[in-house]
Length: 233
Image (tube, one colour):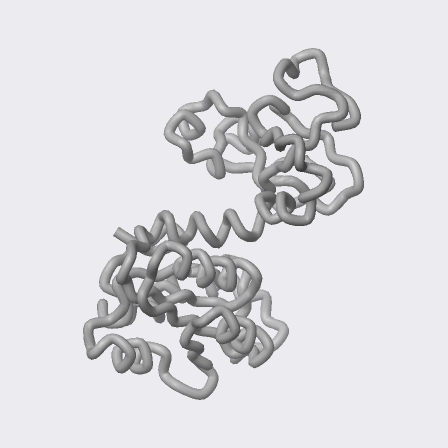
């Protein structure tokens, strides 16, 4: 921490901290409900919720990948690290964005020991969701993607990989689960995805609901659905 403002009490200059990518105030109704990714105060647009550093339509907060960062509501957003922070900084940096995002997807999906979980998307968040599902005790983790390099990484952490450019992912999941479908799943493609069948298209019609429908087709592939991003109970 290089500088602190007059309203910051807990964090001091010289402290080592790690920050989430999203910004929250800690005292609005959504923050009180622990829905900090939908903070009502940090988002300046009244019809929207949620803010983040350097992300389109999520407030005028620059610097997600910057060398220095101005942190609003510093006491709430800064996670103060212990005495070993400098020595283990490459470990603690994993708490900043991708790993917590993937883990939270499995939290929202309600992954429990013994579950059969499907992850849609093998990018960084999807890979961390697959690893998190394994950590939480899922007996079988299936990862759907179409990029060979990503699928190889997913396989390296013990996931069953499904290339949806070559096979019907719904049928593969059904085959892997004796026709029952997955117990839960996580949508980790992201709402800014594009349709590979339309190269270069902006894809305003390729919304999460459409990909959720593919994953949950006819209620067969995934038995528990949470429509707001990750799926679960």
